[in-house]
Image 1: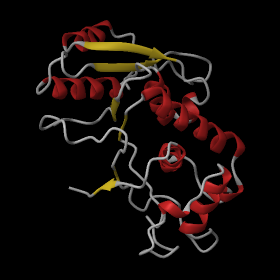
Image 2 (image 1 turned 180 degrees about the vertical axis):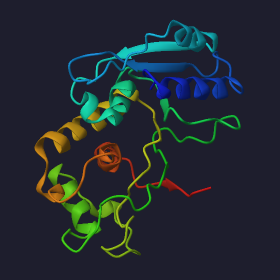
Image 3 (image 1 turned 120 degrees about the horizontal axis):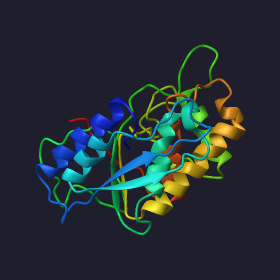
Image 4 (image 1 turned 120 degrees about the vertical axis):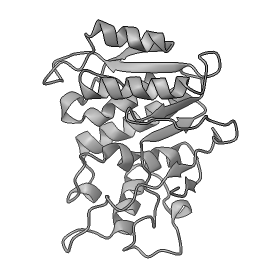
Amino acid sequence: VAQAGRIGYQALLCAASIRAFHSAKHVPIFICIPKHSDRWSSDPSINDIELIKAFEKYDCKIAIFDNADFGSRYPHSNKFYAILALPEDQPFLFLDSDTVLVEPFTSNQFQLDRPALKLGGETWPVQNSKTRSVGEVWRLLYAFFGLDAEPYRDVNLTDAQHQCYPYYNAGILYYSRAREFGQALLSMARRVWFERPDALEDQPLKPWLDQIVLPIALAQLGIPRSEVPDP
């Protein structure tokens, strides 16, 4: 995702680092830019012609999308619409705009139908004396979407421990079919944001909504729990 301001230049640096190792023939790059609407408090689109030319220098394709639900209320939601702006039946790799490659991708790094993602740490669910346990929050959230949580339980961890159910970092995402993945993320994010299930009544949604719905979307797609360790 690229937009006006710092994120646009971070995305350019990300694109340049990819092109240092991979040609456009082998790794196409899509720069996804939100268009302005009344959902944004300031225009997120890129009007800097020189920045657009710089993306073109690195053989990037520009994809414009409409953040139809969130806008300034939750800018992280841009990734949902960006994924939906990609070729729908093609595999994809989404990188946060501040990502920089320091070595090339290899063909065996990504099992596209069974993504293994980096764990998201202990940022969410937020825990204090008044909140439900980590395990209870996740079980209620899976149940809200009609999903069985037990296949995703780490039986070696207690309900009080983060990662008793998976919680991933959403900075790197990939799957074999972009539209299917993007639709799962967006539809679940909409429901959590606008319906606010009881399980989350004492939990903050910002800035973690994308990471909250990510493991639930994977479960809906039938993807088993799989993660990569911290380097």
